[in-house]
Image 1 (cartoon, rainbow, N blue to C red):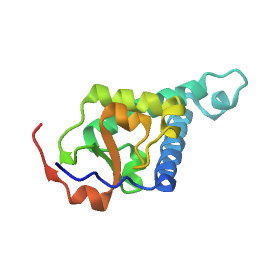
Image 2 (tube, helix red, strand yellow):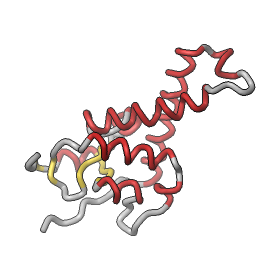
Image 3 (tube, rainbow, N blue to C red):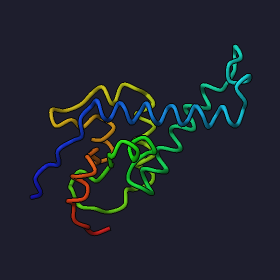
Length: 137
């Protein structure tokens, strides 16, 4: 049995979330404009949430982490420690659960939140990631 992977620290994961949210906000502002973004009753905040979920799910599936995670040197990997691509539907489910806010706040002693448990993932540092061996797909 593979020993459990050490989860990345919560402060670093929160920093990655802020980076993602900021980048998603800038993307929406670039698309709708600053004036439309700041209008009362604007749907722009909903667009930010949608951009965040899609961007982070897509990047997690293809690159092993959202833009914010990549920028803060974190990666999302299968919890069994074998390096293989994540299931795209599980990556999307994981990010949708993060958008609900509650799942990341419900976590185990090993640092894995409910979103990680459902997706079978763990967030690790780049150093830990580099030490993983490829596994079957």
